[in-house]
Length: 443
Image (cartoon, rainbow, N blue to C red; front, side):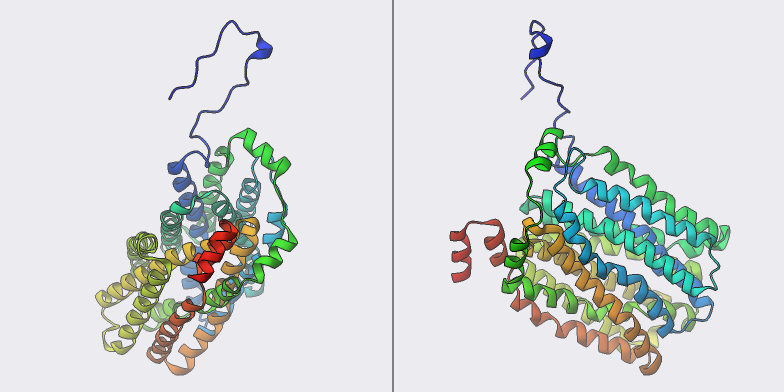
């Protein structure tokens, strides 16, 4: 229906102030929400893909062992575990005319780029300085991730979370793939120019949250004036709920298998199998479509068949692919076999990840959205940080094939943990009325 025409005979004082066009804010436009969250996850993925892929190749070529590489990556992951402390700060902010989460997203993206530019000028032989700059960049990247996830919890309807999570994870996968081209780019333009090239997309994507509002201005202002800040009593109520506590255990242990393998895969390909920069980049290019397929299918199946079944299927897929790869080590020198393994593994990881995002979002109480959801993601990142060094140690001391087989067993063994955590009960408690909660508990 069209808006009523303005009456030209009304006195100026009686004319309503102009309103922004309908559908131009995240709250009003479904398409805009999908594009917005996809682009912001893309901005997150590009520098991470560069640091975890292209730059890791540089460190491998300088002779770092699997264990040393694991230590470096563990330090890079660590700030993602600390973001749990930022959650209460963001939830204490009610918002205002610029929205509740948008100011933090913009600030974080500005600060994400600065350490990358500093890395361009840093002496790569000074690993202590490199670790500090990597830690700083990932601190700001974690803040951006926290604010984006908090906004998603705030603004996504329940029937959109599966598809939105798929798009978000697909955007991050594409960004990681683009970032992993860093080793190939550096081969032609040098590492310093490559760091600058990886910073620019982050700052360009920052234009999106600068231009797109969370809600209409009047609603943002009203929520800023009337919105509830983080309630400590509500936080305690949330943490006392059994499914909430079980969610922390699932978040920490569910990705442990593929996290162990991720530590040493690049060194296996580069140092032991002798892959070139171009061959490594082609594997990451294959990761993108495989990861997007896995993300979209995982989110869709989580909506259709339920989160538990989708996550369990993703974890079983990952464990099976890794076990098969470990037992067929004689085929590792064949590049086609590596391509198939990488594609199948990436499908499984992104399948799991998209379904898991929906799982943890539905466990989350919207009243403490940034705090609780971030705590789940922090536990997952703590798993990555914890397993990084031990995965490298396993590869150095037990051999690649045995380390991958152990990781596959760990991955499948974590599946039963899903049974102790019920998002439906959490939804009834935090998003429904008391009657719904009682019904869910009896069921």
